[in-house]
Length: 465
Image 1 (cartoon, rainbow, N blue to C red):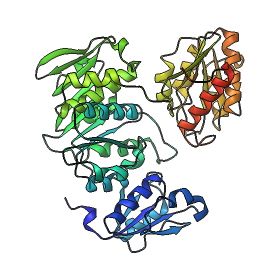
Image 2: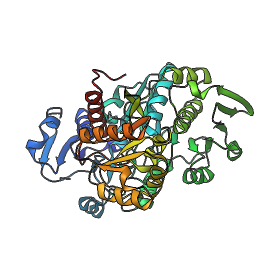
Image 3: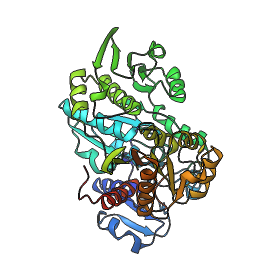
Image 4: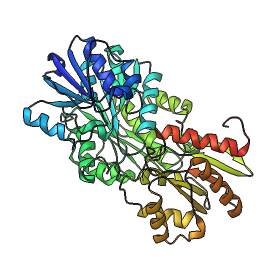
């Protein structure tokens, strides 16, 4: 497999953190690098401060110059006209993931899916760390792969969260094992349609074609189950229905109270009390099984896996308890950036909860979310650019207008939700956006932080927990 690093001339499109990391890696390997961004120079001062001085920079447009390969930042959509121009010129365009893969001496474990991939990636990385193997956790989880892969020794492991934004321009990426959490409608504002989004996720399997290649599949998800049926390598299957897992080399399942496994024909209960695990909810049982499957395929013991799970601290903004006021508990689920993820969090709430919902309209179907809120919520406060469509969907699901409120700022939303919770006797208020954050905030993390600050100000507390 010829490496793109055998070539000399590169262009990097996009000077976000991933683009800067790619350009710096290439410059460090003494390549000729032209990095470009459609933003003006004055908008890129923070990025330029971390960019290798050997990189030539072009502002206000994407510039391939005389590149033999173009490296794409993950924010660039497939339909970008300049990418069609590259194809017509025969210039390959690859993802930052692919560049990092060829620059790494260590193998990759890769995780993708619509929901749960960040928690699964973090937990998987901590399991490998507990096994004593040098480990880095990077990718879509936050740290660009090109920032860290060169420091990982050959006997180490790179645990990578990979998104559809990154995978559509990935061609020869070959992890030692790939894990799939779920597939649900998302990012339809980025891809032409749902089929293109699914196709992007499926690309993670494209090079796993040998009988000894491993992949980990969520058999609760019909799309992923179909991929597993076509897969010719070794399979770890996990889910709720053990009868679906008979053809798997390793099977992991839950009965709702414990986690079980079948390995080499032997059945064991490897996590006896789900209720005692730090990760709560059925969706997190699936995440734990996916992480365990990835580790087992690489020879990690159940003892190490369970120990890492027991020590795991849940990530911020994922059904995170913030504070309690007047008997009402406040939860931050800002990471729920689509309807499917929001539903997973809402299903952990006591009936009668009040939800703060809304953000960027990604064109997703709101029907199932609206129906659940109409039948289980004691109130909904809508925010963001999707407000009008959300209100129509909730009304269409039969939710009376007296249960609905609107807010312009997060602070207003928290106050409105608290008042509604008090009046309705709700036990919980949850930020459950079901949308991206970019209409009001820089990121889901900032959205969650503003929510938590508003809750603390409301309740007169000085710190979370």
